[in-house]
Amino acid sequence: MHQRDELDRAIEAAAREMARASHAVALVGAGLSAESGIPTFRGGEGLWTKLGEPTFDGWELFNEDPAAWWQRAIDFKEEFADFNRAIDEARPNPGHLAMADLEAMGRLAHVITQNIDNLHQRAGSRHITEIHGNRYLVRCMSCGSRDRLESVRLDRLPPLCPECGGFMKNDTVMFGEPIPEDALRECYRQTALCDLFLVVGTSAVVYPAAEFPVMACRRGVPLIEINPEETPLSGLAEVVIRASAGESLPAIVERLKAGTSRS
Image 1 (cartoon, one colour):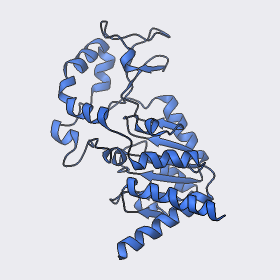
Image 2 (tube, one colour; image 1 turned 60 degrees about the horizontal axis):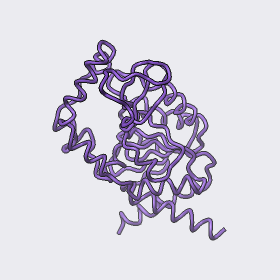
Image 3 (cartoon, one colour; image 1 turned 45 degrees about the vertical axis):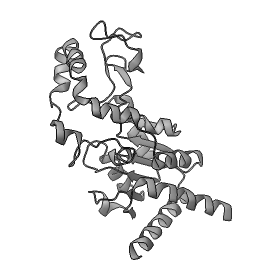
Image 4 (cartoon, one colour; image 1 turned 30 degrees about the vertical axis):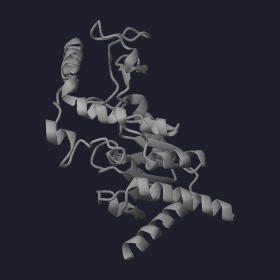
């Protein structure tokens, strides 16, 4: 009962903070996608725990020989078949849907997601920056334009950008690869604009993403953490909700709706 009361108080406090904010920004991590059945990378059942960590020189290999990199990606596609299938079969969970509701209500201005699964878009969110890319897209290494992966012909490797002729690469960001400039610029812009920062389902150990809430806190912006586990950001958070996003975010939406109806 004590834990339930504590959770209710935290959700109520989070709803109050969101009601006061005019430009709330959320940083979302793999914990939210895990609630849709997508394996995390780390942890006991994580993809990298089972298959081993990906090579740390992937970006170097792509730059050395983009055609060979694409051929390896095609050849080893089956190795990640279970993970790819999990993403393809996943559906937005109540946490994703609640974030879309918050945006529609004018309570959440922007989502910075570390996830590559496209579930925010499918849930109905519109203002999104995918800092680690999107697995359903390819990106030109020269002009930065993006296109659907399914539209790219692989009979010639590497595929070339129809806009500028540059080499195309899958949009997901590899170890050693710089974060796309347009995504990184928007993340910093949103961090500078926000007057409330939510951290949802992230371990807060992957940079530069983990830097954004810290930067906001240094400006005096209140931080709300939604995570069943403690993270390096827990001590900075004004409100800590020790529950899943799928439970917490819909409850926050309901509190906000109730508050609106009372006013």
